[in-house]
Image 1: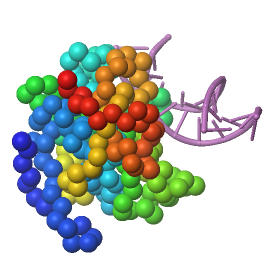
Image 2 (image 1 turned 45 degrees about the vertical axis):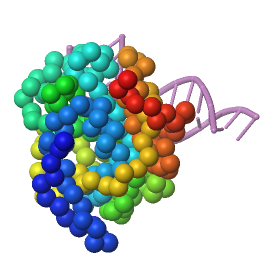
Image 3 (image 1 turned 135 degrees about the horizontal axis):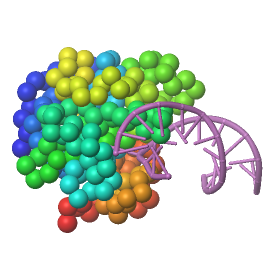
Length: 212
DNA sequence: GCCAGGATGTTA
DNA sequence: AACATCCTGGCG
């Protein structure tokens, strides 16, 4: 299991347990699933993680390690928990966390967050959108939270103003990953099907284990 | 509500 | 050439 190093308190006084890099020293698929419901903190903005995807560095043709030497060297040269941020389609920053487990390495892509705190800066960065849609997509959430390429490689789990805190357990389902052309059949997209902040609905809510 | 198309830049 | 996306406008 993973350890919890520090804790803090939320606005209502509940103890918030901060995840350490050891959370990400496990299988990427497990990490992606267990992050649903956790709280992502980034420089004053907080969001509940409601949608993620797992990518495996071996035998997963959709993972950047499959076709980008730079991604393979990133895995080699960074510790679990490092931010992997890249520009996609020339205009959207996408935020991943590096995972390095004994039984497999890879990434967790953050696909959607439900805004909890820091709504004003989010609205300023994404004017004209309803609050629940401010971060309802992988490109939207980086824009709303003010994340760009300068975060790439960063040890954000150990940053005073950033990190991830454990949330309550929520119902989590899985489905096929979105927007890819290779390995479309792996059911490594995870989410809370009851959230209004998903990037897309889960067409057939599937709670079966992704590992069998 | 759905679908088509265009914006845009890094990687290889 | 491909790409882990988003937004708009045209339809009804």
